[in-house]
Image 1 (cartoon, rainbow, N blue to C red):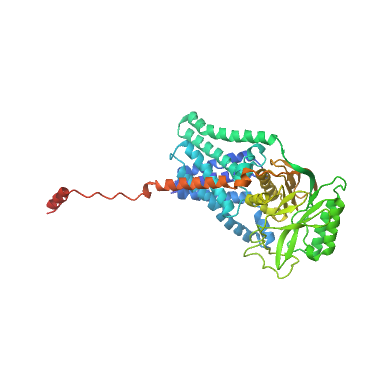
Image 2: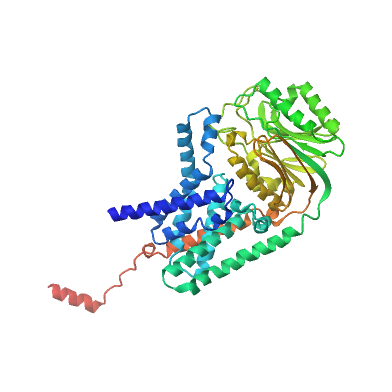
Length: 534
């Protein structure tokens, strides 16, 4: 029993160390090379165990990775809901257990069924990354928790991430999981005494595939973002004003004044065609604030620029978290209402009940229902805060005609001054530019604000906690990428493939088939048996 306990502790230590590698591969550390190793220990541990034990190891890996990647979320929950750190930590532990530990456990259990001596090397090298991709798309689509998928660790590797224009981020996750599976197979070959040749055979094809994708992507990115039109300078404004739990008149005036001052630093001659303020830059209802509306209209007219800003909107008994567009002429350019509300914070059982009138500090919102396309100097595909994590929502806006992506966000609640969440958020937003081949303009209250080109290259940024503006020339683009046209077809194919393999493996298991019926004895044998009995 002591020996089993010792081996169990060793497995737990290895699994948790591997989860640490997952966290270190993401911002703010960005040791992206660790992503190609992080699954190897888990694959080796589950190789010799039962699916039940493998599930436990995978769940431990996922739980630890969830905490290590988003440790900052506990303080955000505690601050936003005015709760203590302990209740917030317990709530986040429950969330990690369902959304992360459960899905990672499924991957590990499935891997335990598919690895070992079952099947050929090539079939295992396809099965493991397909299984990982299937688990990711389930986490993103079914549980609506797409934060920090494995592919996001490669956000700075421009050549590799170009495949996202066809497969979305899931294609990058597939390649990274393929690299991990190949390394695990090579180590097993060496451990089993099959020699370096067998190890090289396990690595050869995956290395060729990954290297080929990287080279083709690099060549494609080097061509630059050709085919654009209506090129104009665009500016983002970041004031660094921390969020407030209760919106008061004094806080609203502080926010507004900070954004006005920062915007006035922009040149009037040859200035931007579009100025973007972040989510909650305005905490007043323009419908009931004609003087503020007039002031903003004058600002847009004086700068001869459209102004996009975030603020609440009240209509027919509903409060919306909205983005508003004011045209350079001073007229309204319409609004977009946030479709994916933050669970428990903006909607759900823990959110405050919807007020009967326009509340000065709303705590519950109604979700919008139409794509965020607003007409500026080009059609804008507008998203608010974490909506940028949902490729299907962004693709819907592009299919509706958006030729430039704009994301406004309030990351101040997440970070608490650490700058970790905002760096992770911005890194994931980069993929939406690649997937759609659109420029992405992002304005966040406390950072990171910035501009990304259609190949995922960061043109300019404003660091977390800084105050300032960033300006760059962007061009509208009208083509539709395979990913925009087909959506998550690649990830769903991986899901079907993995499900079919697991089902076939379970059906072929020794205990899965009913025992064969005993054939009847011949008449002579029956008679002889009766005589012996007599």
